[in-house]
Length: 191
Ligand code: 5GP
Image (cartoon, rainbow, N blue to C red):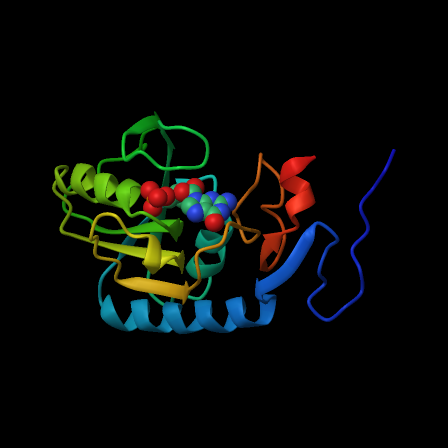
């Protein structure tokens, strides 16, 4: 059995990763700031966090634990139709929410907003279900790639146009568990 070994540098960086874009330390610090901001904005209310599987799982777990307001959880899983890694904006629900969001203060939690097509669709379809309010928190934002304008109330980091993995984000199902956001070595794609 071959096991990939974590190297011992400060970021704990890992051999398939060419460059660490957002370190674990910066993620932790920024998520704490977002938690404080969200807790202040929703003071006196209960928030209903809707995580978009699978990518948002890690961010949602971190964000939930730095909130100082009551929170409930639900998850939905979606998949975009379209060639390769390009988003088409046509979204299929693979797993819908378990509970109604009517009258609740919903916070959609997403890993990354890229073209904006997925979030645009999600905002429209969840708004139609009558929440008391709806807002979005994303860990990462590739603003330069936007094709549709979509409001994003809480952004962790704006990043350049590069395909990233880690902190919930995958390539072919892998690397979601990396504790930082990194850019893959090109050999990983071409193998
Ligand atoms: P959008 O509809 O905004 O173009 O796409 C959002 C979705 O595309 C994200 O939820 C994510 O699944 C995927 N995505 C966009 N950029 C990246 C990236 O750099 N890395 C990974 N792993 N997924 C990405």
